Image 1: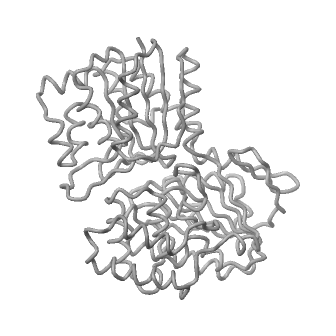
Image 2: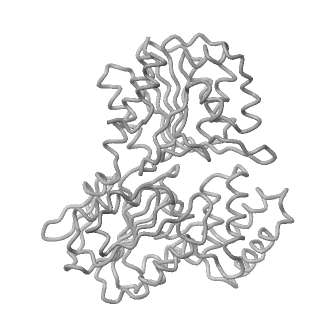
Image 3: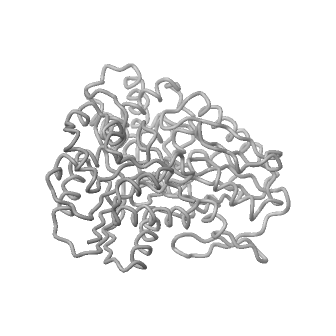
Length: 467
């Protein structure tokens, strides 16, 4: 069964081999990078507990006794990660806390598992009151963990807004406003999370201060950020932090110039300025971190997801070029890269794969329905609408299944996309200006719908020529 809900409809209508192969390769990558599977494969129980990640290094720990492990699973992949962990360590878990976005299915957490699992449905990408309740519950359990032999965090993308504990001087409403302004400002995720960490009581490793230093802490992590930086994933919940209050203040000053009169921004700057003057404790730095028994292990990332796609196309005889997962660039820069790929003459059966997270600025524009992946497709359409694509297709997709505020994961361009655009005489620029990329791609039958995938490995960009 395909994770792409409208796959059959897409294939039937567009009748394009490069497109159908791309969708099948995506299915393959989703199957073999399923978070439940990745967690299960990372755990080996012998005479001790052995854990491994994407670098294949084996970490060894004392095997905890029955009912002596506390598990905190937070993020867009939290349900599947927790199920994978329970399947391997069920009898050794005393309590687990599952923090999941509102609207995500919790069908795999059955009634038997609910006996010792607390489920909190929180909010993403803008936090809500449930986000603060989730943080308070986790902190309470950590502070009462003296009888616990092992604490395990299962962390995936989305954690930053799902678990929120505002620093003294700002409140939840302030954080919501600041988050929304940063998300629409063009700031990248690393910059956004630097601000989040310094306006939080738990991010940037601060949550570790709530745990007895002698208690072993393990974090199994799915990376959704360019570069796989531990201090950026989930705002560095269990990591030491490179950034400073000065960095956070600089980011606010760089991106929030037009909204500088906002009361929330004013309060944030007061807090950050206090931090710069060392009146507020910094995030956890490497020296303090090294005094604790914390092990962070990345078990999945965008690179591995892209290589699964590459593996699939190689089996089918395609020439493949995986260009890396470091495309954390602006929309304008991405369009230049993508246009260059499309306008290059390629041999038949060629597949080019990129990964990353393109940043887009929405300031001053009407908020419609869409997301960065669908907007990228629309901007490319504007450029190549007169190209003769033959059997060539382009896909931009978010692996979490939700692109922006739309119901779609992303979109694509295939020959019939351009045919429809011309026959319907649609003005692409109108939809871009109104931020309605999803509306345009719906009219062009060129959107990809998966619903929530229960995974999150950032975005993937495919350029495939069959003939």
